[in-house]
Amino acid sequence: MTTEPPIQWFEEVDSTNALAARAARAGDVPPGGVIFAARRQTEGVGQRGRRWLSPIGGLWCSFAWPLGNPVDVLPGLGLRVGVACLRSLDEMMSSVGTAVDLRLKWPNDVLLNRRKVCGTLCETIASKWGPTLVVGVGMNVNNRVAEGEVGATATSVVEATGSEKDVEQVLLALRGHLMAAVRTGGLPGAWLESAQRGLHGPEGWTAIRDGLGGACRARLEGMADNGRVMFTCLDGPVSLVLERAFPEVHFRSSRDSGTT
Image (cartoon, rainbow, N blue to C red; front, top):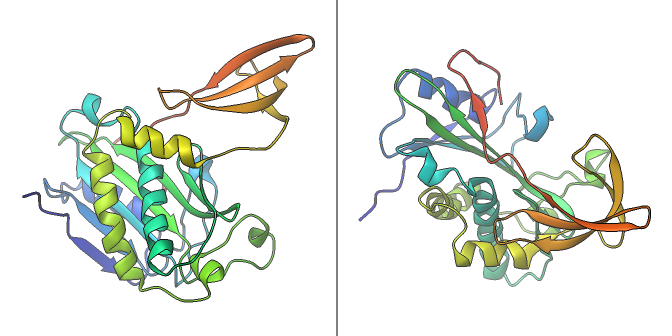
């Protein structure tokens, strides 16, 4: 029987990913992993260094786990983590009988009624004890975000359902899905099917980067079996298919002390 990693709760931290990174470098992450969770973050950061507002009421957590063989775990990890969050939110909504539109914004964010409700950030932390995987999750649960500029693109569970959830119970449910994600390699059938079924994309034609420093008019066609998204791209009279890859994990050296 596999033991689930313990959860350490804090009232306030700068960033749970930064806290997990410091623990990894200090050799304080047990072999079975640990989850750091906070009621509030003061310096939460998401993908591409963007600030993530982390007030009381949301779920802000990071799972730290010493990597055995990274080759077995890292391929497809970002997408699996996104699917894990999607599944957890779907179960939450199903349990209260609330009909909502949940989608995976490729590769690892979750949209609720077309607004962001959950974001993730996967990193590996290098230290003299070996690499440690850190999976950060920010989920808007009881915090209200539908005011101001952020509210145009984000939402929360309470805004969609009208009722608050026990954040600690939300994390307990999420923990099982995250553990399944980090104990799996690649994109086996059920993971890929969930990602393909829940894939969100712009309707019609939109502008995307072509990977060569330019942009083209493109239409999302779906997700390939390797987890990459496929676009039909129009460049004048030429039509071609582009596959967009994504960084599985962000790597940080033992000297990088950024708070992500």
